[in-house]
Length: 458
Image 1 (cartoon, rainbow, N blue to C red):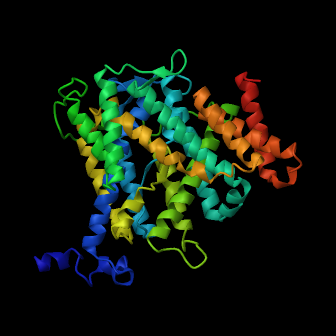
Image 2: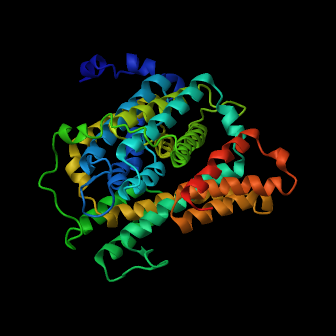
Image 3: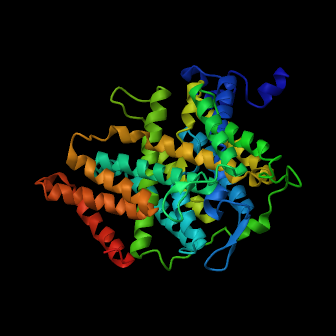
């Protein structure tokens, strides 16, 4: 056995230990493996949520987009699992950091809602994601990350994440039936098994989180999926494992439609995709890096450009294979908390994602009653930063307020972000603080105004 361990390079002084600097980082294979399993458990819910985010909630397993292309949940699940695995492995070997990546929550729901409403084709979505990824990669390579960080005021950066969080929670309430939004906002049918199971799922996730149980969201999804069987909410699959259906994947591979890319609406969606990914990655790598003790004395992460480059490459590769914006997951902190400090943690996560592609039949049967509570809880996690907005300063709080209210009451994140940014600029200009607004924000205001004009809202 010892010879086998040495042969595979897993010995204490083996090539893998040396490559990932286990001795310097005071870690080992056991710690890193447990960390990888922990991280995967906390973020594997993406495999259940991502197909529903794009195709829609309910029993439908596919849709035909506005271009006549058949897109299936199975295809979305397979490419999400494989791309998440490959890009996380790239993070391991190139950046050597314990960060895992997958389809980001937020952009997927925004673009998925438009896809389901026939307002945009799947090819248009992938074109938007590709361009945002290319921009992200270019900015990462030339090193002007700090310019972007400086351009967007802190209150708006916080509000963007919070607004997307409210939007995701809204979808959770809507798709589970807990809330109704057809004729105003109302309470759902609490005699429905779907609603009751969804509420139970939310309670399970909340209680497990309160007790700091790792993988609370995934456990909640699994529990409600199983409980849904006797209620007829969960439909049992004919098989548990299957070889990935490459025929279904062909429709999402290299599916690009650039015809609507440079319209006002297309620009807003690219803005949402880029800035959502950019600031999510920035916050995650610094936050998780701090927990792992990777920051220097000035609070900076040495080699921060590497995870940014991997993230950007992931988004570009994802667009070519049918996956929405790839981003670094804050759930990586779960693995770090149990000792993960190197890229080997990411290797474990990456391998588990790739293996998951062979269990597509299990993930596809997960009902709305199980994924909906996960959305509500993810929304809750995303809005927590809202407390950092300075409400004692009206000019700083007005833009975020408008952004979130417009997002909630119009059901459109693009409208909410546009209104919030324009309001932030306007209130500062008309209160004598025009010089506090970065020139880049004034330039950004032009297409945002065009968005409202072309949408017929003004």
